[in-house]
Length: 279
Length: 332
Picture 1 (tube, each protein chain N blue to C red):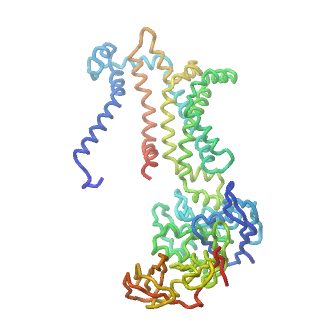
Picture 2: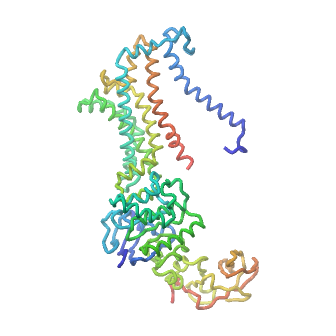
Picture 3: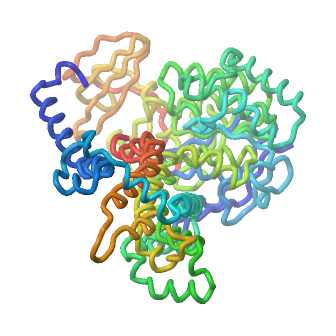
């Protein structure tokens, strides 16, 4: 910012507000992580205290690794999230490209139809989805989850991406056509790299709900071999007794992959969110 | 041989007719400029020729072959776009070579042609740079280079100079004219700028509302416009139009006279008041307001001291007048 326009008071106020918000947002995560390293008694006696030499314990992590096949859950979650994201981005971007690029009858109608999914939660159709999965024999497979999450993510992906695709210069696509590139090459080599920030935005918006979802894994794939991390962590939560050490440890570890993916996408994400605003 | 022949080309978007019965021929080696105000369909016509839009009716022939059903890449054309449209992920070399690679030309031919285009456009030092590292003028030269290496039967230019600043626009204009002489290629060039049209064209096609208003060499159109629109569009400052009654003729036609054909005097066929003077050094433009508020532009060569608010008379010769009917058609 220009030096002449900078007011120290304003800058301080802005930072104070941002810092406060950061603290509020990070506080629950912080509490989960510190308590995952404490003994059960310490968690209840002083939930906000940092682990001290007396209260430090990794019993939670040990339980998690011993009980249940945590790595398998982890792997399942990873497979489901990554595959769903990949399919959402691939099909979402292709549909968005078609809607943005080609004039055909019912183009607007098709766009609205695809956007309808944003307004109607997919969970309303759970019973029908379950029936379909039973009929096709996909119950207790990861594929069932991947298909459902792909369907769940597509509406928003198509909606966001088609807006960005419209901004890609027509001249560029036409230059490609005159140089003899196929429509697929134009899509993958020219258009997709230019809407990468938007794709990262869509990826993050979709990734977190998929990773955290308990509903569909519980209904469609509750078998031991297909449990996801969120569902797997539920074994530690009982109706009468809850193994808080294990729950907190499992949650702390569940945060990690999302955080890593987020860091990868975040630079692109910020560009994606702000690009419409400043240009 | 004709490089391009359009027969009865029509184009509609839904209910809207953008192009109406366009007939046109471009001879081998000719430089043809489509000119007209924005929204007149000139860019659409170019896109129909390129094959980026399908003609609703009529045929497009390039080099004697009907190409209506042939995709853009196989029509033997190359196009330069207003926004340069360079591939952002490729170097200058890669941008120029891509079309040839798609044509499966041997490596040696590609290298030769890219090197030649680089020399022609003095881009040799930039061949390894990305488009984002180039200035606007350099980017447009790369776009032109990308067209040259294809060695097309027909070059298409879509307002290539609109994004450049005034000085660069003139340089690039001269460059394009030089290239045309050097390559002796057929070129179709779209612009809304009548200066570009006048300076570059062998033949100008004036379009309005999807119709061809007149086709001819720049001087033919300038000296002998077919209607009021063409007369007013070509020439800067543009032609003055006065009602017949104002110069003492009967009828409802209007009379056009070019700013450079008017002289100032104390008494004239028409008199008015000077409202504004633009001194350009080489010539002086004087805006004269007539009694009923009509404004006439007078272009005087050299430097003149005329001060606003003085009363002047406008003098012009009968031979310099153009008469147009109320519908805008030329009366001869």
